[in-house]
Length: 411
Image 1 (cartoon, rainbow, N blue to C red):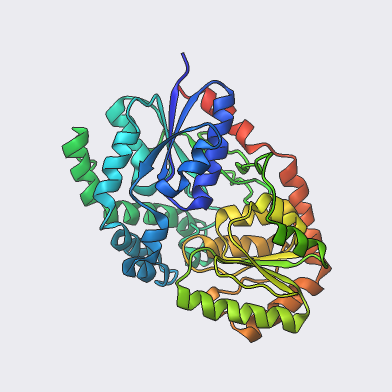
Image 2 (cartoon, rainbow, N blue to C red):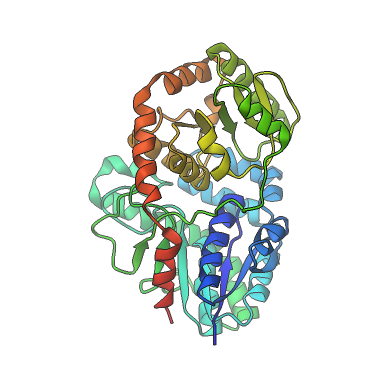
């Protein structure tokens, strides 16, 4: 009898989409798959034939709240970042935990990110195995520092390893009171306490590529760097005629998109983007719901990155893990304009891979600073060669297939 695999995906589209790709691969093996995600992703999940259960934590609402804005604007200090996460989740955390518990009913296997270590609690409650899903390197190593604690890179191997333990401990203490009440109440489990749930034997699936983050030699065998879990563009998908005609009317444009932003900030940023693109003489596609169209610029809402990015000259983006992966796979150079979380880390990886210039933090983006970076991005052929080299390696991988092999042995 096939297993019911429950995948917890409480984040934005960049977090949900790889889970859908992974779930689709598991369904091919005959597994029954249920994805827990925000209601806005119901069609995305069910459109690929997977089960769906809603979560109250809508990432758009979380980021758009006053606490959410304070979280994203809190800088790179990991303690500040994690306290901001607590503030952003506080109004919905109780509902989120209840939704996760309901959605996981009947599961034979739990796949979940490290947020609150939800998979560990659910697995313990249901008496089933759980597997952690990592979208960034989060297992302790002496090779590099935790993406949320880049300052530790300069302090030596021991400090680099400790940075992972520190981030995990702070993250757990931030959410522990609510999660322990949930364990003791609804789940009927003893509180996990100051140390948190046991995870040293838990398998880990890293949904990124060894070509982008070389696997450290000191990671244990339970950690599997599978390669990215790319969700292919649906066979019946077709571009809007406006987009199709714009792409055909001139040289490949530069795609510019930064995810969710406040309307006032989006207006300022995209005004600077339009000016900078025109100064450099580049056509542009602006990833926004706002409507704007000219001979050299076109706004586009939600377009599959796997289809769009290979048709561009370059990509300018915020550095989310999924967008970074899509740009690298397309073989086009990228400029990362990070805001918070792991985005600065991915921007640094793109630069060190030779696939783009140094990151330009979004808070520092002006007409002048972006013009300078666009000249560098479009004028340096080495960036395109670097991106194409990484793309060639990514195309040789099948992250979903590798993850399926690992999960088949988790019983």
